[in-house]
Length: 114
Picture 1 (cartoon, rainbow, N blue to C red):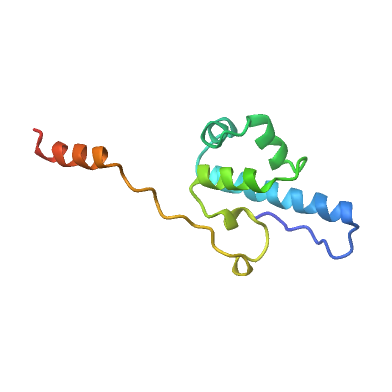
Picture 2 (cartoon, rainbow, N blue to C red; picture 1 turned 90 degrees about the vertical axis):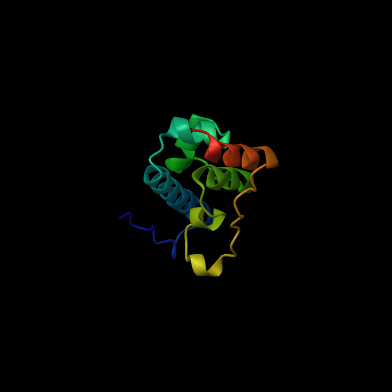
């Protein structure tokens, strides 16, 4: 288990660095739990592998659109990538997309094929 940094007595820059590190550790844990490499996550999210690497080591501060893209690619709630108590964060879970009519018809046709 990863140790959370104590940010109580840190300056503004130090708090930002600690938050970036906490986000990076969380992102790496979620990526590994999904059994994805950085390259695979990059392909799924549209974010470069080097950017993901920099996020995971805490070198970059994630932007909201980056967090959303990563959460979508990992198929997790956006709040799951925000370090801290999840109970204080609003849920951003989206229902799974509906299948197209063509996909539903093809599934039904597949039931009848031998």
